[in-house]
Length: 345
Image (cartoon, rainbow, N blue to C red; front, side, top):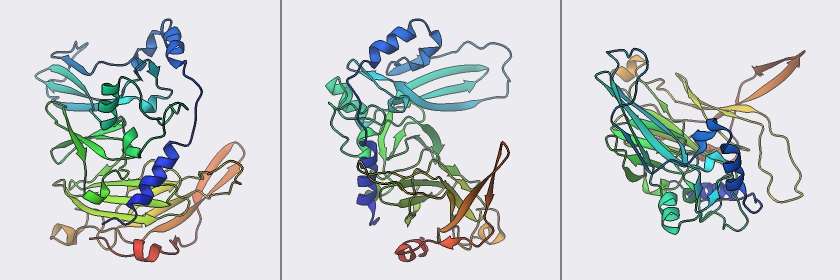
Protein backbone atom coordinates (compact mmCIF):
# COMPACT_ATOMS: atom_id res chain seq x y z
CA UNK A 1 0.00 0.00 0.00
CA UNK A 2 1.18 3.57 -0.70
CA UNK A 3 1.30 5.06 2.80
CA UNK A 4 1.64 8.67 1.62
CA UNK A 5 -1.34 8.73 -0.75
CA UNK A 6 -3.44 11.09 1.37
CA UNK A 7 -0.57 13.56 1.70
CA UNK A 8 -0.15 13.70 -2.06
CA UNK A 9 -3.89 14.21 -2.65
CA UNK A 10 -4.17 16.93 0.00
CA UNK A 11 -1.12 18.76 -1.30
CA UNK A 12 -2.29 18.76 -4.91
CA UNK A 13 -5.79 19.92 -3.98
CA UNK A 14 -4.42 22.82 -1.94
CA UNK A 15 -2.23 23.91 -4.84
CA UNK A 16 -5.06 23.87 -7.38
CA UNK A 17 -7.47 25.88 -5.22
CA UNK A 18 -5.04 28.56 -4.08
CA UNK A 19 -6.11 31.47 -6.36
CA UNK A 20 -9.18 33.67 -6.84
CA UNK A 21 -10.60 35.60 -9.79
CA UNK A 22 -13.10 38.42 -10.29
CA UNK A 23 -16.59 38.11 -11.77
CA UNK A 24 -16.58 36.65 -15.26
CA UNK A 25 -16.69 38.66 -18.48
CA UNK A 26 -14.37 36.47 -20.49
CA UNK A 27 -16.98 35.00 -22.81
CA UNK A 28 -18.10 38.38 -24.16
CA UNK A 29 -14.49 39.52 -24.49
CA UNK A 30 -13.56 36.39 -26.43
CA UNK A 31 -16.53 36.74 -28.79
CA UNK A 32 -15.53 40.33 -29.58
CA UNK A 33 -11.94 39.39 -30.37
CA UNK A 34 -12.92 36.20 -32.20
CA UNK A 35 -15.13 38.16 -34.61
CA UNK A 36 -12.09 39.83 -36.15
CA UNK A 37 -9.47 37.11 -35.69
CA UNK A 38 -10.26 33.96 -37.63
CA UNK A 39 -7.15 32.18 -36.36
CA UNK A 40 -8.83 31.91 -32.94
CA UNK A 41 -11.08 29.17 -34.35
CA UNK A 42 -8.88 26.71 -32.47
CA UNK A 43 -10.22 28.13 -29.21
CA UNK A 44 -13.87 27.68 -30.12
CA UNK A 45 -15.59 24.85 -28.29
CA UNK A 46 -15.96 21.65 -30.33
CA UNK A 47 -19.03 19.39 -30.41
CA UNK A 48 -18.92 16.17 -28.40
CA UNK A 49 -18.35 14.04 -31.51
CA UNK A 50 -16.49 14.61 -34.77
CA UNK A 51 -16.62 12.19 -37.71
CA UNK A 52 -15.31 12.51 -41.24
CA UNK A 53 -14.94 9.28 -43.26
CA UNK A 54 -12.49 10.83 -45.74
CA UNK A 55 -10.45 13.99 -45.30
CA UNK A 56 -9.35 16.09 -48.25
CA UNK A 57 -5.70 15.43 -49.09
CA UNK A 58 -3.64 18.07 -50.84
CA UNK A 59 -0.58 16.90 -52.70
CA UNK A 60 0.77 13.37 -53.00
CA UNK A 61 0.29 10.91 -50.12
CA UNK A 62 2.93 8.19 -49.53
CA UNK A 63 1.28 4.92 -50.59
CA UNK A 64 3.02 2.84 -47.92
CA UNK A 65 2.07 5.06 -44.99
CA UNK A 66 -0.67 3.49 -42.88
CA UNK A 67 -1.77 3.40 -39.24
CA UNK A 68 -3.57 5.57 -36.67
CA UNK A 69 -2.33 8.91 -35.40
CA UNK A 70 -3.88 9.99 -32.06
CA UNK A 71 -4.04 13.53 -30.75
CA UNK A 72 -5.38 15.08 -27.53
CA UNK A 73 -6.02 18.64 -26.42
CA UNK A 74 -8.50 21.11 -24.89
CA UNK A 75 -11.71 21.24 -26.95
CA UNK A 76 -14.53 22.55 -24.71
CA UNK A 77 -13.67 26.04 -23.47
CA UNK A 78 -16.98 27.14 -21.98
CA UNK A 79 -19.96 25.72 -20.15
CA UNK A 80 -23.21 27.32 -19.05
CA UNK A 81 -22.27 30.80 -20.32
CA UNK A 82 -18.91 30.84 -18.54
CA UNK A 83 -15.72 30.73 -20.59
CA UNK A 84 -12.65 29.21 -19.00
CA UNK A 85 -9.92 31.71 -18.16
CA UNK A 86 -7.09 29.41 -19.20
CA UNK A 87 -6.84 26.87 -21.99
CA UNK A 88 -5.44 24.33 -19.49
CA UNK A 89 -9.01 24.16 -18.12
CA UNK A 90 -10.47 23.12 -21.49
CA UNK A 91 -12.00 19.64 -21.46
CA UNK A 92 -10.01 17.15 -23.48
CA UNK A 93 -10.93 15.62 -26.82
CA UNK A 94 -9.03 12.67 -28.27
CA UNK A 95 -8.85 12.56 -32.07
CA UNK A 96 -7.85 9.72 -34.36
CA UNK A 97 -6.55 10.07 -37.90
CA UNK A 98 -6.84 6.60 -39.44
CA UNK A 99 -4.62 6.25 -42.48
CA UNK A 100 -5.11 3.40 -44.99
CA UNK A 101 -5.16 2.92 -48.77
CA UNK A 102 -4.23 6.51 -49.43
CA UNK A 103 -7.21 7.84 -47.44
CA UNK A 104 -7.51 9.47 -44.02
CA UNK A 105 -10.61 9.10 -41.84
CA UNK A 106 -11.00 11.42 -38.87
CA UNK A 107 -12.77 10.79 -35.59
CA UNK A 108 -12.98 12.87 -32.41
CA UNK A 109 -14.59 12.21 -29.03
CA UNK A 110 -14.69 14.22 -25.84
CA UNK A 111 -13.13 12.36 -22.93
CA UNK A 112 -16.07 11.67 -20.64
CA UNK A 113 -14.33 12.52 -17.40
CA UNK A 114 -16.20 12.74 -14.12
CA UNK A 115 -15.90 16.54 -14.31
CA UNK A 116 -17.29 16.65 -17.85
CA UNK A 117 -20.27 14.43 -17.01
CA UNK A 118 -21.17 16.35 -13.85
CA UNK A 119 -20.95 19.75 -15.53
CA UNK A 120 -22.86 18.52 -18.57
CA UNK A 121 -25.71 17.41 -16.29
CA UNK A 122 -25.64 20.64 -14.26
CA UNK A 123 -25.23 22.95 -17.27
CA UNK A 124 -22.64 25.03 -15.43
CA UNK A 125 -19.18 24.86 -13.86
CA UNK A 126 -19.25 23.24 -10.44
CA UNK A 127 -15.78 23.94 -9.03
CA UNK A 128 -12.79 26.20 -9.55
CA UNK A 129 -10.30 25.16 -12.19
CA UNK A 130 -6.57 25.51 -12.71
CA UNK A 131 -6.88 29.03 -14.12
CA UNK A 132 -10.62 29.64 -13.67
CA UNK A 133 -10.83 30.25 -9.95
CA UNK A 134 -13.91 32.42 -9.62
CA UNK A 135 -14.78 33.30 -6.04
CA UNK A 136 -18.40 32.17 -6.47
CA UNK A 137 -17.26 28.63 -7.29
CA UNK A 138 -16.31 26.26 -4.47
CA UNK A 139 -12.76 24.90 -4.30
CA UNK A 140 -12.19 21.47 -5.84
CA UNK A 141 -12.92 18.44 -3.69
CA UNK A 142 -9.81 16.72 -5.01
CA UNK A 143 -7.40 16.92 -7.96
CA UNK A 144 -9.52 14.27 -9.66
CA UNK A 145 -12.48 16.66 -9.64
CA UNK A 146 -10.47 18.92 -11.99
CA UNK A 147 -9.18 16.15 -14.25
CA UNK A 148 -9.87 17.28 -17.82
CA UNK A 149 -7.67 14.59 -19.45
CA UNK A 150 -6.48 17.09 -22.06
CA UNK A 151 -2.67 16.97 -22.20
CA UNK A 152 -1.51 13.81 -23.93
CA UNK A 153 -2.67 10.48 -25.30
CA UNK A 154 -0.64 7.28 -25.52
CA UNK A 155 -1.24 3.75 -26.75
CA UNK A 156 0.24 1.04 -24.55
CA UNK A 157 -0.49 -2.66 -24.07
CA UNK A 158 -3.70 -2.45 -26.07
CA UNK A 159 -4.97 0.53 -24.07
CA UNK A 160 -5.48 4.10 -25.19
CA UNK A 161 -4.84 6.48 -22.28
CA UNK A 162 -5.86 10.15 -22.12
CA UNK A 163 -3.46 11.83 -19.69
CA UNK A 164 -3.49 14.81 -17.35
CA UNK A 165 -0.83 16.00 -14.87
CA UNK A 166 -2.54 15.80 -11.52
CA UNK A 167 -4.64 12.63 -11.28
CA UNK A 168 -5.52 9.31 -12.94
CA UNK A 169 -5.38 8.59 -16.65
CA UNK A 170 -8.63 7.82 -18.48
CA UNK A 171 -8.84 4.64 -20.57
CA UNK A 172 -10.48 4.85 -24.02
CA UNK A 173 -11.44 2.26 -26.60
CA UNK A 174 -8.76 2.56 -29.35
CA UNK A 175 -11.28 1.72 -32.08
CA UNK A 176 -14.27 3.88 -31.05
CA UNK A 177 -12.61 6.45 -28.72
CA UNK A 178 -15.43 5.88 -26.24
CA UNK A 179 -14.38 6.50 -22.64
CA UNK A 180 -14.10 3.30 -20.59
CA UNK A 181 -13.31 4.94 -17.25
CA UNK A 182 -10.42 5.71 -14.94
CA UNK A 183 -7.23 3.71 -15.32
CA UNK A 184 -6.53 2.75 -11.70
CA UNK A 185 -3.23 0.92 -11.40
CA UNK A 186 -3.85 -0.17 -7.82
CA UNK A 187 -6.63 0.57 -5.33
CA UNK A 188 -4.46 2.78 -3.09
CA UNK A 189 -3.23 4.74 -6.13
CA UNK A 190 -6.67 5.97 -7.18
CA UNK A 191 -6.57 9.74 -7.57
CA UNK A 192 -2.79 9.94 -7.13
CA UNK A 193 -1.03 12.09 -9.79
CA UNK A 194 0.11 10.25 -12.92
CA UNK A 195 2.20 12.29 -15.36
CA UNK A 196 1.11 13.25 -18.86
CA UNK A 197 4.65 12.55 -20.07
CA UNK A 198 5.55 8.90 -19.48
CA UNK A 199 8.53 7.25 -21.17
CA UNK A 200 8.27 4.08 -23.25
CA UNK A 201 11.28 1.76 -23.49
CA UNK A 202 12.24 -0.64 -26.29
CA UNK A 203 10.93 -3.69 -24.45
CA UNK A 204 7.51 -2.06 -23.87
CA UNK A 205 8.15 -0.96 -20.28
CA UNK A 206 6.40 2.31 -19.42
CA UNK A 207 7.87 4.63 -16.77
CA UNK A 208 5.84 7.47 -15.30
CA UNK A 209 5.73 9.68 -12.21
CA UNK A 210 3.60 11.95 -10.09
CA UNK A 211 4.54 14.67 -7.63
CA UNK A 212 3.13 16.54 -4.64
CA UNK A 213 4.90 19.85 -3.95
CA UNK A 214 3.26 20.42 -0.56
CA UNK A 215 4.08 16.90 0.63
CA UNK A 216 7.61 16.90 -0.89
CA UNK A 217 6.97 13.58 -2.61
CA UNK A 218 7.88 12.16 -5.99
CA UNK A 219 6.04 8.99 -7.00
CA UNK A 220 7.52 6.62 -9.58
CA UNK A 221 5.56 4.08 -11.63
CA UNK A 222 6.92 1.16 -13.62
CA UNK A 223 4.37 -0.56 -15.88
CA UNK A 224 5.22 -3.74 -17.74
CA UNK A 225 4.80 -4.36 -21.45
CA UNK A 226 1.64 -6.33 -20.62
CA UNK A 227 0.07 -3.25 -18.98
CA UNK A 228 0.34 -4.43 -15.37
CA UNK A 229 1.80 -2.27 -12.63
CA UNK A 230 5.17 -3.68 -11.55
CA UNK A 231 6.40 -0.92 -9.24
CA UNK A 232 4.97 2.15 -7.52
CA UNK A 233 7.27 3.91 -5.10
CA UNK A 234 7.17 7.24 -3.25
CA UNK A 235 10.43 9.13 -2.73
CA UNK A 236 10.83 12.16 -0.51
CA UNK A 237 12.34 15.13 -2.35
CA UNK A 238 12.77 18.31 -0.33
CA UNK A 239 11.29 21.37 -2.09
CA UNK A 240 10.22 19.27 -5.06
CA UNK A 241 8.21 22.13 -6.60
CA UNK A 242 6.73 21.41 -10.02
CA UNK A 243 8.22 18.52 -11.99
CA UNK A 244 6.95 18.64 -15.54
CA UNK A 245 8.94 15.94 -17.32
CA UNK A 246 11.82 13.50 -17.03
CA UNK A 247 14.13 11.35 -19.12
CA UNK A 248 15.39 7.80 -18.82
CA UNK A 249 19.01 6.80 -19.31
CA UNK A 250 20.71 3.44 -19.18
CA UNK A 251 21.20 3.72 -15.43
CA UNK A 252 18.85 6.43 -14.11
CA UNK A 253 15.54 8.20 -14.26
CA UNK A 254 16.46 11.90 -14.38
CA UNK A 255 14.11 14.62 -13.04
CA UNK A 256 14.99 18.33 -13.46
CA UNK A 257 13.78 20.16 -10.34
CA UNK A 258 13.58 23.94 -10.80
CA UNK A 259 14.13 26.78 -8.36
CA UNK A 260 10.40 27.07 -7.70
CA UNK A 261 8.56 26.78 -4.38
CA UNK A 262 5.09 27.38 -2.99
CA UNK A 263 4.46 30.12 -0.44
CA UNK A 264 1.53 29.23 1.78
CA UNK A 265 -0.29 32.06 3.49
CA UNK A 266 -0.04 35.83 3.01
CA UNK A 267 3.01 37.56 4.44
CA UNK A 268 5.04 34.40 4.74
CA UNK A 269 8.70 34.93 3.87
CA UNK A 270 10.31 33.34 0.83
CA UNK A 271 13.31 31.07 0.64
CA UNK A 272 15.83 30.19 -1.99
CA UNK A 273 15.64 26.76 -3.59
CA UNK A 274 18.52 25.48 -5.68
CA UNK A 275 17.90 24.06 -9.09
CA UNK A 276 19.01 20.46 -9.26
CA UNK A 277 18.64 17.13 -10.95
CA UNK A 278 17.14 14.23 -9.04
CA UNK A 279 18.37 10.87 -10.23
CA UNK A 280 16.61 7.61 -9.34
CA UNK A 281 19.19 4.86 -10.02
CA UNK A 282 17.83 1.73 -11.67
CA UNK A 283 19.85 -0.53 -9.37
CA UNK A 284 21.88 -3.38 -10.92
CA UNK A 285 19.73 -3.77 -14.02
CA UNK A 286 19.98 -0.90 -16.50
CA UNK A 287 18.16 -0.22 -19.74
CA UNK A 288 15.92 -3.17 -20.67
CA UNK A 289 17.42 -5.10 -23.55
CA UNK A 290 20.64 -3.12 -23.28
CA UNK A 291 22.54 -5.59 -21.14
CA UNK A 292 23.18 -9.28 -21.50
CA UNK A 293 21.94 -10.34 -18.07
CA UNK A 294 18.48 -8.94 -18.79
CA UNK A 295 18.34 -10.61 -22.20
CA UNK A 296 19.07 -13.92 -20.47
CA UNK A 297 16.06 -13.47 -18.21
CA UNK A 298 17.60 -11.51 -15.34
CA UNK A 299 15.47 -9.61 -12.82
CA UNK A 300 13.55 -6.61 -14.10
CA UNK A 301 14.90 -3.09 -13.43
CA UNK A 302 14.18 -1.76 -9.96
CA UNK A 303 13.89 1.71 -8.43
CA UNK A 304 16.64 2.07 -5.87
CA UNK A 305 17.95 5.13 -4.01
CA UNK A 306 17.52 8.79 -4.88
CA UNK A 307 20.50 11.03 -5.69
CA UNK A 308 20.56 14.80 -6.01
CA UNK A 309 22.94 16.75 -8.21
CA UNK A 310 22.82 20.56 -7.72
CA UNK A 311 22.86 22.71 -10.86
CA UNK A 312 24.95 25.88 -11.06
CA UNK A 313 24.20 28.72 -13.44
CA UNK A 314 26.96 31.09 -14.54
CA UNK A 315 26.57 34.23 -16.65
CA UNK A 316 29.32 35.09 -19.12
CA UNK A 317 28.52 38.17 -21.16
CA UNK A 318 25.13 37.63 -22.76
CA UNK A 319 25.30 33.82 -22.74
CA UNK A 320 24.08 31.47 -20.03
CA UNK A 321 25.97 28.34 -19.09
CA UNK A 322 24.56 25.47 -17.07
CA UNK A 323 26.89 22.91 -15.57
CA UNK A 324 26.88 20.10 -13.05
CA UNK A 325 29.01 20.73 -10.01
CA UNK A 326 31.90 18.33 -9.88
CA UNK A 327 31.32 16.70 -6.56
CA UNK A 328 29.56 13.45 -5.67
CA UNK A 329 25.76 13.72 -5.49
CA UNK A 330 24.31 13.35 -2.05
CA UNK A 331 21.56 10.99 -1.05
CA UNK A 332 18.23 12.15 0.31
CA UNK A 333 18.07 12.82 4.03
CA UNK A 334 15.83 11.97 6.91
CA UNK A 335 13.22 9.28 6.58
CA UNK A 336 14.19 8.81 2.92
CA UNK A 337 16.36 5.91 4.01
CA UNK A 338 13.43 3.59 4.62
CA UNK A 339 11.45 5.01 1.72
CA UNK A 340 14.04 5.56 -1.00
CA UNK A 341 16.79 3.03 -0.41
CA UNK A 342 14.63 -0.04 -0.18
CA UNK A 343 14.42 -1.89 -3.51
CA UNK A 344 10.93 -1.90 -5.00
CA UNK A 345 10.21 -5.22 -6.70
